[in-house]
Amino acid sequence: MPRSPRSTSPPVAKSTLAEIAADLGRDRLYLLGWIKRFELPPGQDNRYPATYLAFFRTVVFLKLAQIPEEKLIELWTLEKKLMNLLHVDTSGSPTWMIDGYAAAGNESRRLFLSRFDIGTDLQSACVQPGLDFSPAPAELFGGRDMGEDALRLLGIYLAELKPVLATVAAQSAVLGQAARWAGRMGKGV
Image (cartoon, helix red, strand yellow):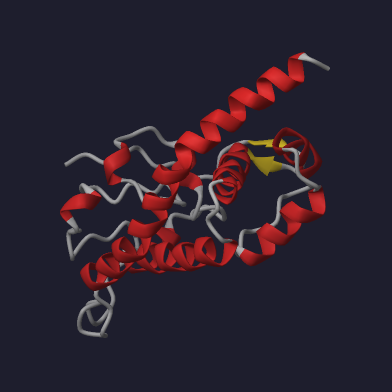
């Protein structure tokens, strides 16, 4: 099953953190806190790839949908562990954990926050156990031999994701009404 094309280098830096903050209606210091809490690499020369804006926009939307930041960080940690088991972290990109935002592909195969395409439908709750995105030589022992089980971790991840998706679905109507109301109020100014 073909996966979305992955970039071997990070997307071209396009924005300063101040520009990203202005686009999101957030303070730059707020975003610096997210960079630290989500353990994202700092920008180079205060320039950040477009994937940062996309990732931060997702976080903003989820927080508007009443998803606690602690839950987002918990999901993020599980996603990074899963991507580490699949050796995505060896792609050579310092922003490997959010590079999925730059790739197009099937939404049903993407992890929720990183947007990484795992190559199989998430609802089937399976991933090819031997899948390795690393160009490096294989390790002496397989992941399962060392106690790492991608299928088990995927199951935990999906169980943690389910209530988040239910909350987002429940909040979508309210958020849509709020957006329409804000649009009407903005026209009156």
